[in-house]
Length: 192
Image (tube, rainbow, N blue to C red; front, side, top):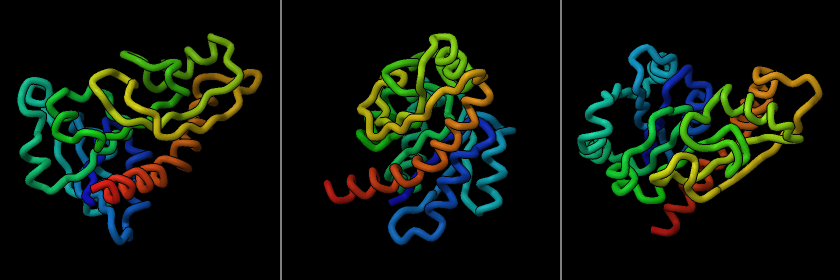
């Protein structure tokens, strides 16, 4: 099974995913896709000899969403790892139940347009929540909406800032996302 990892930023989750599957007998990260030519994730991919693709906004949202390119490369599964653009319907239709995302909160709370990174952590703290966490879910046509695959929680502590909470959330992401991707992909293999 070949994975394409979509990422917009430094790529800490993408890095963990690439390393997790580096020697895997059945799953391989075959492509890293970014919407930012200067994204740190591209260097991490290059260091691991993983091919990269820079996508252009107009083509992504109005064209065929790079579907022929992904199919030509044999991509079976798409993993979003800090990718900030909404996935177009054409791509979801081409990869039904084969696109997963990780969100830095316990969905359905603190999801939706504009809810990413620091914005999520700030909202959780302002609301006085006792806990936060991560949600790994399938991607559908709506932001942070598809079926939940896995959640993990962490407690908020007195004096938490968005930055301190983000550190604990990153630990959860790195601890769980690669393994949950593996389980999810292998389950899809069994179904087919």
